[in-house]
Length: 235
Ligand SMILES: Cc1cc2nc3c(=O)[nH]c(=O)nc-3n(C[C@H](O)[C@H](O)[C@H](O)COP(=O)(O)OP(=O)(O)OC[C@H]3O[C@@H](n4cnc5c(N)ncnc54)[C@H](O)[C@@H]3O)c2cc1C
Image 1 (cartoon, rainbow, N blue to C red):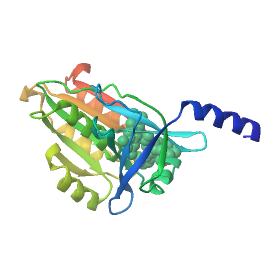
Image 2: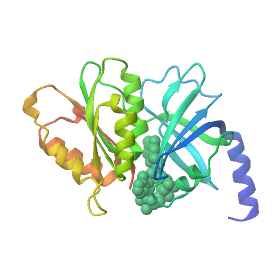
Image 3: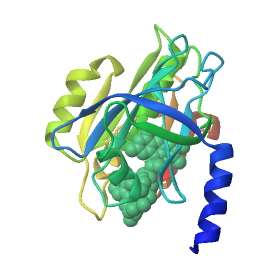
Image 4: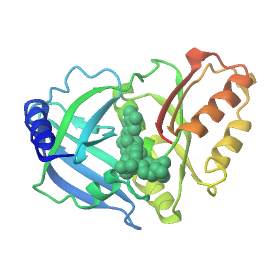
């Protein structure tokens, strides 16, 4: 990009970008998964009724989506859970964040998933979906019936997840190799029996090809589109 274009983009960005401040960063072991607490003075979270995603500026003209969870509308704070186990501007950016840093973001908008009141909610996904699922749990409130499974690449992350998020009620599974990273989730879905008759709603999020496969498996078992809600996060 030439200097003039660069300057124009920066000028436009300055008009649109909002700023959050990093309150804390917690890094899991191994350091490929991070929790980032943010303060967002410009964000009114009080009317959120669906899960949200925040478009963060992670580099020059580079934006990546992350799901706010654990928000407190009074203090205007929330937490992002970010997978950084691959090479990419978003991974690099989050690994460099520290307390007090400014985070520029374009905006926060709905990810179009909302709780299904009174129904059993079944979550299926990977590291990238943790924030999304926690936000659905928060929106569903106390007494929500949640279960499902989460596929994580590292054994230690599985242990940490089981320890810190036992309240979510998800089974932790190992991600398979590059050929089929969601093999364990597919197996989990194979064991789902529609004859149980409890009218569940499935929320599937994460790796796009795997989300497509899981959706097909669930639809093949007779679940309707209303019962299978999917979000592709990366491919
Ligand atoms: C609505 C929405 C909400 C999201 N919420 C979250 C969230 O809360 N937390 C979160 O971690 N992610 C979330 N994501 C996914 C995240 O935006 C993408 O994974 C993003 O591409 C990561 O950017 P990057 O610059 O690190 O990698 P990219 O530059 O986009 O990709 C570089 C390479 O890494 C691969 N790659 C990208 N992401 C992953 C991954 N997770 N695992 C393995 N390989 C990967 C790509 O296929 C590509 O080959 C969300 C996405 C959407 C659409």
